[in-house]
Image 1 (cartoon, helix red, strand yellow):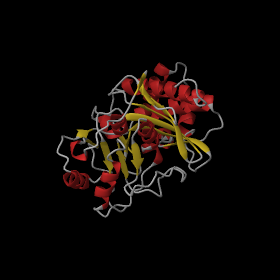
Image 2 (image 1 turned 90 degrees about the vertical axis):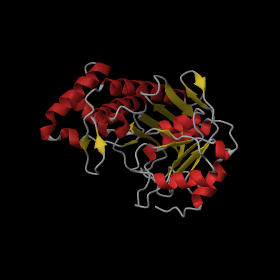
Image 3 (image 1 turned 120 degrees about the vertical axis):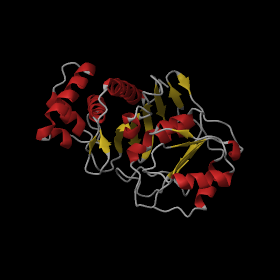
Length: 312
């Protein structure tokens, strides 16, 4: 995957994800703070975002970055210990890091709106998985003209190697090309699903599985690592079905994983079978839920999901 027009972008993604994964590995204090939206955030989230955004800014100074975190919580007067701990972890990866500079790196990711070329980052996708010592991912993707064209996933508790992908060039894990399964009998398919039920209707997934005659054990894990599992052929179907609470999916939760799976031969749409629309800023405003498969069984899964009368 080296001789292509996105060679510089892929090199930056690989470097950024390896650095972020190294920092995440080093964070033993897995205490979470709660943000205004009630979601958890950790030192690793902030450190990962700082490192990735710095690498991107150095390589592509004009590219906006839409990322999940900002430095507001860190800058609070009472967070001295948190800032110092963050500084220690960053210095171990990038010696000589100044804390004020690190806060600025985090805020490089504060772009809000769509542009013709921008990056999107989830510094730790699956923070709850990270907190319990389960699966999580650092997810980074480049979007041009509303299409994901480059992406990468670091899944430190799954592998030391990074998953990399560029549009039209296939998907790799370390030095190896990855490929989805060729299972065509949907009843023999394996479903990959979230451990957490906060953003997906697990009861609806159970109904779909029953309708399709799927009886195999589920592969359960957090984060976009689920896309990597399907892309690598270790599962066949991943569904993220809406709870009906009005939640709209965020682009950083799906951009890298969706391209990875597509380039591994799979297919990703929303619950209605529509392509994911990455041209609306930070949210997938025009999509409802996610269905990701090996491609062969995709239409059958979409058909089964649509019997549920899915809505936001």
